[in-house]
Amino acid sequence: MRSLSLIASLSLASLLAAPAWSQSDLQHQAQQLFKPIPSTPPALPGNPATAQRVALGKMLYFDPRLSESHAISCNSCHMVGMGGVDLQETSLGHRWQHGGRNAPTVYNAVFDIAQFWDGRAKDLEQQAGGPLVNPVEMDTTEAHVVEQLRAIPGYVQAFAKAFPGGSEAITFENIRRAIALFEATLITPNAPFDRYLKGDARALDGSQREGLALFINKGCAACHAGINVGGAMYAPFGVVERPGAEILPPDDRGRFAVTKTASDAYVFRVPSLRNVALTPPYFHSGKVWDLRQAVAVMGSSQLGAQLTDAEIDSITAFLGSLSGDQPQVTLPILPPSVATTPRPKP
Image (tube, rainbow, N blue to C red; front, side, top):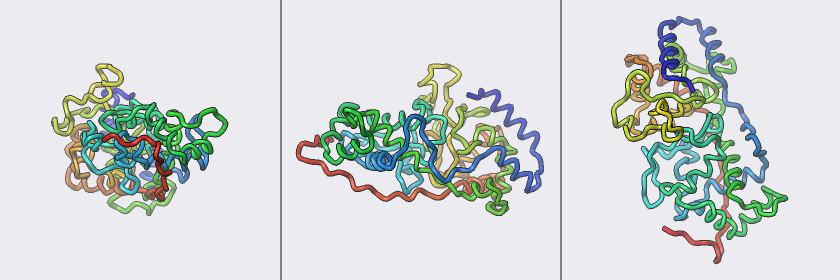
């Protein structure tokens, strides 16, 4: 993890350098800092994708019977068709409880260094099991979700096809593996910025190119770089100046809860900016609904820069170029319950 001092020095160096690039130089610099989203999902280590596993993972992703109440699915908080989020400050979970943080997008999450705002899950597979057993979210147990699925004949067949050869196909591990494989398909290639990175200089308009130059020169790219324009490191929220308590709640100390290391207080995984124009509200607190305001907050808090209205407009225009082709997902037909299937417990 980069330290606060390194981030600050990178930002300062960028501010001092601030070169006036030609258009070809700007494109070349962008190609060094960022990478386009690929057109096909990446492989998951130790979890080979098959058509049967991805189809099973899609069913599980949309099935509310994985929750204790049979009312909440993965898609409830990470909606396919809405940028992979739920457009809420914090999501509603079991018995109308609110989660503690804004739900990050599932789109392109496969490219992030870790999952959740505090990085407590190393990958999609580990993340997929977390909400199931969280009492504020889906409030089930590993044993009960396995019992639930084993009591649905259609799932018994689907798991046997997806995970053949074992003595028992329906396990909590296989549930997580299947969901992760489906989530890995939720990528958004072919954004205007991707086409620009691949060599099409006209894929960005003048305002977006100006915003890109500012994004690099002001120091935003010190943290928001790589394939996901973020998501690849951890950083303190408030490198130069901490935002107000509403945006940065003092009782949420971020990654400190995972590592118990003092330097990780108020440190969070840097979010991906892919499709950011589609995924308000912003930050882990979900308190900022205006992307322009979010840009201004990041300028002052992370860079110590009071951005002008014109600069905010240009950077916001550039961020709009990060919206790619949205996943086209056909809703699955879920296997029906039978008389012996466990019933919901509201």
